[in-house]
Picture 1: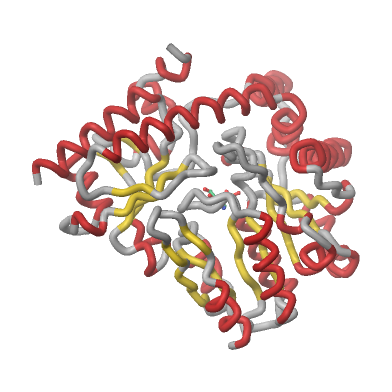
Picture 2: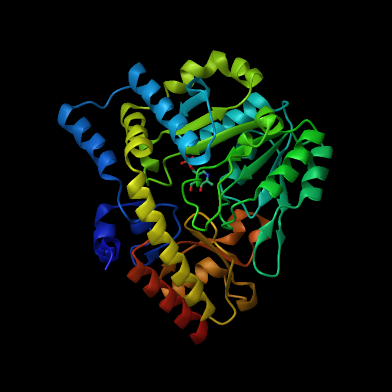
Length: 385
Ligand SMILES: Cc1ncc(COP(=O)(O)O)c(C=O)c1O
């Protein structure tokens, strides 16, 4: 037995997360959090802060340490050399997305969001009074998604200023290849467009594939990209609120310089120190998690196979499964059906864009026995309907 297998639903509910309290009668599989706790080094940071009553603003030395830790992790993990000064601490990845749109695109220009997409991409953009151009991606026979480059090209031609790239791709689980990223770069470059590259799931590649930071590909991509990374998903600390925005060219660094200090001040002491504990001291913890997630993914694929009419896209990275329920034609949509009939709380695919209609998103970062139970209940619900 793996120690994660022994974590119980009662313990998870008692801890009080959104995932385990919003639907008290259901298995929570709709918020991108893991049920495996946090690395010991991160817990130490929080414990020490409590013991010393230190809960204030982030001191300059800690800010520098967090930037250094981020740059060190990017260099070690992905061979991407980023000057520490080009790392900006922000509360979260979506804050970086807002900055990318507001500071680095022509005023009023639409934003391209390939779908299926992480749900907030579709709401953050209109909240900034910008139009979203949804570009449905191409679904292959084997369930893999491919970006529709012709449609992205057309959206730039129609005046869009920015493409939102999510890699590894929530919710469809793809880890994009060098060729795919290079093809994206060509389209963006042709139009003088910009890319916001959300790489929050970079630590969570499950297959034997490299994660390639888009901005690290070549001078072109470095020149047109704003990147966001975070320890939030890989080390399970989104509530500590410290993401990182990476700038990768001199013009952007100069343009952002007047705001850089303010940006740093939006992160607190706990988040800043936790990031150092995660990136610098918790690689073993992450490796263990990734191995466990791989096992969960394999179980999921096997069990989905036993549910007639249900299909799953290959999950190369993330801990998110994208389930094709279209053939089942479930009354009220997949999420409502499985919550009502199986007691499993999923995200309905239609929140991920029009291309997600008839699909559902399942977070499988849970104890394996709980995952097994969720899938057994879903199978029974489908067969018994
Ligand atoms: C692709 C992606 N981007 C951003 C976020 C949100 O990150 P943050 O809380 O840092 O804004 C998530 C959370 O699930 C995500 O999956």
